[in-house]
Image (cartoon, rainbow, N blue to C red):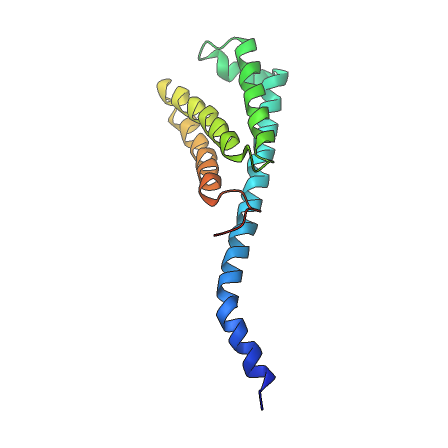
Length: 139
């Protein structure tokens, strides 16, 4: 006679590790995606609206207010592009490029603290590129 406990425990042992691993990666990826999108929307809106701290920061690098607004539009567009699987990679690359620009500008003005602040944000985008879109099927 087939013992149901042994049958189910065999199935759980076989599939449990893979399912838990895949689901935990997807949950982590979704959490990272939400964080990156919110940060992108917040910073993009601050640049687009021309907030005083943002304009002061870019004024040190001789950016005009219209150039800051253009960078804000790029950041907002890349944040919205992260929502769709078709434009996910392009949105991540655009946002990482904007962060890399700010990071290089911070380093060119010898502001190591400002550059160190930008490092986690670019790493978040690189992690999102590595994990791919959360709802895609894993092969």
